[in-house]
Length: 214
Image 1: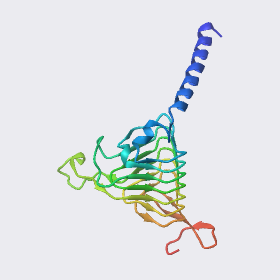
Image 2 (image 1 turned 180 degrees about the horizontal axis):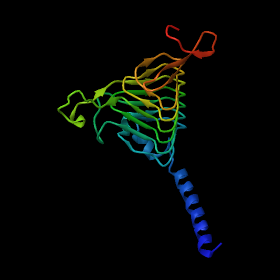
Image 3 (image 1 turned 180 degrees about the vertical axis):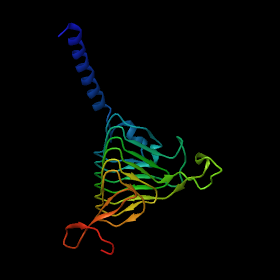
Image 4 (image 1 turned 45 degrees about the vertical axis):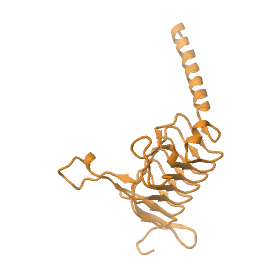
């Protein structure tokens, strides 16, 4: 191995070690100054580094012992400093885990229950673009808003998209890549785009393939 190559390996190790250290110390916890910018930031909660885009934090409430992974974007509204009709707009319940690369974009009302597992690269929003008028660019048309609620104990797998008006009951499983809109009872498994119920929990406690009317 040449001197140059040995130096490159040594330098790479130093860079990786430094990056790991910086990410460790850049975690936002309950006692950090940045946490005071939130509407509420519970004890034992942490936002891992590097953090994604975050603004209008005063409209975001994070419960106790919540873990938010790296590169997660948490935002409310369109512009910084925007006033909201009611606050908090985004509410994350106790002990919930938000996977890396997830985007939670609130404009009206997003409520995520306690003990929810959110996988990587999930997108959750309560506002969508409108395209009813073909004479106007989509960007110029007023969007539609509808509250979103994700029941306690649920699991959203990787790459799930949750659209405005979605209401999930407790202990709901949403399969990877599903696009969810509408109201669903608890203790079901959703899959597909658009998502539909594929399994439900019966009175015996077992999970069975879902059939209409069950």
